[in-house]
Length: 151
Image (cartoon, rainbow, N blue to C red):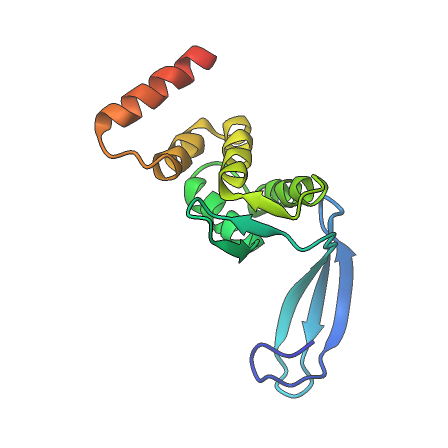
């Protein structure tokens, strides 16, 4: 693995351990060239996924984009990085095992909303406000009113 600090191509693994959900391996690495330490994660990758956007454009699935959107929705909420990682792993695993290689972006958004609804309703509303493109306060009121009917 190449060092992210000095680009030296021969780094050493100092410690390996499974992550909390046993879906990834966490490796602490050391670069003998510059002395830096860094962490990498190794995870199972079942198949290449392509996201089909609403305009028909096709792009490669980006797990980090899903994670970033969840981190934004869950910012300053009582969740840990490990919880977010487990949720993202679950979403990715579900997509990979669906048997489909082309996934509509709408399906990914719905999966994220489904998981956020279970984890934190405030984060669910935050994500929905962007995902469903709220323009006015009445959009929030309508959405939250429907949310209250579900409980």
